[in-house]
Image (cartoon, rainbow, N blue to C red; front, top):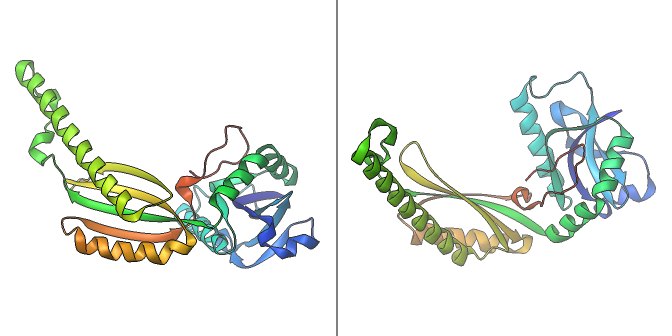
Length: 251
């Protein structure tokens, strides 16, 4: 039997596994395309899976719906246990392949579960006017000689300005929200704005406090457009394992 894997969870979070060594149906959680999900016991861990037909190709057959289903299962399991998400379309050929992967990565999985226990991810998007207006983004390949060098210097200067403002804004966000950990990316949008994509790791008990801080930030930072989502499973804070294995964790 091939298995489609969604995430690794804490076995102790599921008392029904104390009486079973074989996969147990996970009630009230439907998998991809409505398939039954199972708790697959593996040492001190549980892997949430559903049966997989090798003839199915989720990347070609309704891939968008399959991806939505995958994320939904992870979200549902996150309500029950600390979890480590697998990447979309992670498949194990049989029971032994799944057990072998868990055995080879058990120390890594357990360490991540312990580190992330009782924690959640909040996702914050901050949109501000770019320090580099559109006229400064002319292609340097369209000119030669002194003009080419001048545009190179101009582009480098504007890029430094953008990076400096992004750093200042990220520091301001860090001081305001005080997360346990954070992951930040910055990019320029097609509309000429600067977008900071921020993932904050926080304690589950601090979710309401975090949301209150977000409400305060909306009032304080009128020059920014902000959008908050979460709590989510800690996608950005799962440390990858150095060992190779059949399935890959989401990072």
